[in-house]
Image (cartoon, rainbow, N blue to C red; front, side, top):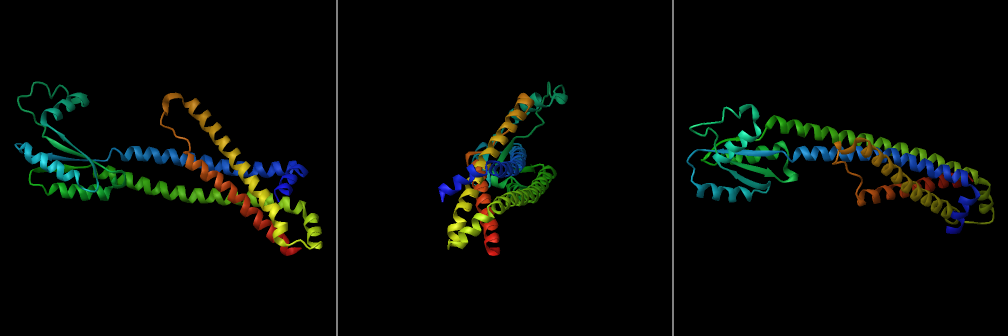
Length: 286
């Protein structure tokens, strides 16, 4: 079977090359969309890291009470980290980060800023619902004066993430269907080109499995080659884009090893399934 599959590349190099090219460019367009989705999702995750809950504390709260509360809050399943910010630290931060109020904070007899607990959430809980639940629990502490987590901003981020997932799913599925259709057509052309060979094999008593084997293996090899070529094209496009943008987008990511393995597997499955469907349809007519 392997010998027959490899001989098919020698007998019809142009058609085999076109089949590999069709698989490569179909997976290339899908891969480019995947790269855009990957980096867009990473950008959203970067924004989600800024989801933070701040519990402002009443003045005069004992340090022991704050320490015990911090330990208790750190045990919440949603909480990644709890940081205590004193009144002096809050004032120093405001003077450093809020330039428009820097002069107003100079020479104050009394620090107007309260101490606070800053709570960062684990990645799975950086949503409006989880932040609201944690904020409600924090508000139950008697020494907590107010709790803020940017509710409107977090809810807007949730909506953007849901919309992005829906768009990625729909467009990704459409790209995959187009790729399968194009690849199926090229493999059917290859099968029709060898229709006489298939008919002769049937006449001498070859079974469907024996006839189908080389075609399926040939389609699998084409899928592997097409997947490898698609990855090479994606990398070339990614490198060219990153070089053109320079240092403006240092956080751009390429596919991980697992993602590349999935693309190769997808190309292999497409070649295999396309061959099975095309040869099976032809055998039913012979």
